Length: 266
Image (spheres, rainbow, N blue to C red):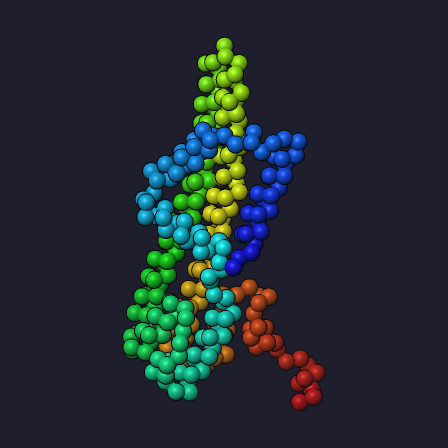
């Protein structure tokens, strides 16, 4: 589980509630018409921009990607690829059929290798699979970013509605308060929804998409290297190029050149 998202939501909500409750009652910040304008307008605007299927998938993906880190670690993928290529070099590609692989893309790539397809075909199939997955992730990000853009706009619309109601009933002092509450609280609701929920989730999905793209690119190179049965050390060199320099292990070791003292002692 991704505790950063959970802690951020809890901390942000707690700080805002504490600020609201300091010197006032919580009931003054509750306005049903304002909530209806912001949430209803944001949802309606999002449904106009995107299909129902895209919106539904966006919420499912956000629930998975923001609260659970489903993406494999690149270092784990490299270790697995290293183990698989050693199996191929000792035995054959057929031996990979008996090895359980959890990652769907890697499993599909291994199966294509076992079935004897050419490297060009395998790269094409896996690349298409990667692009399809990335497009779905990017669409989900766009949905939440659109919600983040629409919520403050509908907050302003609610403010205008409240001001119109207030100005049209100035002769009745009792109506000024509720109308003013709608005018101010809808702006608050829109800003909170956008900056505490929609936009942070969109940014989180963008980060997850980048991680997913890196992992899938790494998997494609792993599959092609496994099919060729290349030297495990060379495969590590190729795959660790996808990692930041501070996380590379084998590259740092193999790139060390012998010192003068070592040559002299030899």
